[in-house]
Length: 293
Image 1 (cartoon, rainbow, N blue to C red):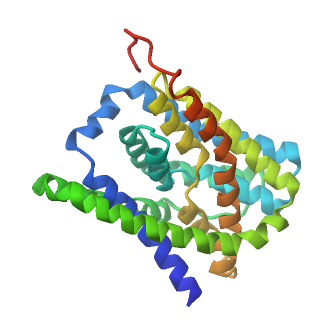
Image 2: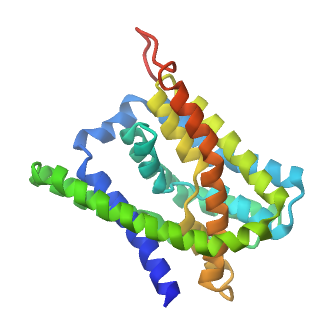
């Protein structure tokens, strides 16, 4: 029963988040990618290449046990966390950049996640299995249909969309709190099991990831924050799916507890960056006459 509730809540949080984003998305927002290719190229390079490499270095440097090392590496190669869009709103990051980057990461992950899994199995012995089809079903099926539905409502019923978005956000926030409560209940006992070294490695990984993302975001502070969030957050549903597919004998709730503990540490490790970014908000402005890239 609890397993069904957890999986239902996690699935619908993603659906609601994407539907809400679609309600407020304009058809021309996708042109932002073509207008600023340098921004998105740098962001993809950081999230898809730099962060996994940093994670691998940290795993070796801290000499983590196999289970912890595998979990950290897996969260590092699973990008495109829908939570980054919600976090972008609270941090006053660019919603357009965040959502475009989320969709690009989901598309790229179809190729990069299986490639990274294959590389890790060869160099580290991690026995994970991830096919492009598995990544496609886990990511795009949950992202595109609800977002396109929200965009359709916005296009055909422009007066209804803002009002509906308010109510969808309220339901989303309630459901998100419920999921967060379940994750904390499941993950809290696991935090002690992770060990100080594993937690420290995760904190360093998140700190380096949001620093690299912030630098890759270019001159605009709202873009910097959007890229930093994308680099620091991992996709929990994709991570869980790969673990369960790779090790069918594991219980879903057990996997959820472990993944939840790692995600919880990541969110806590993001707090210093959020505080710093808000303090820099007034001074970190685009200089007059500069051209963002």
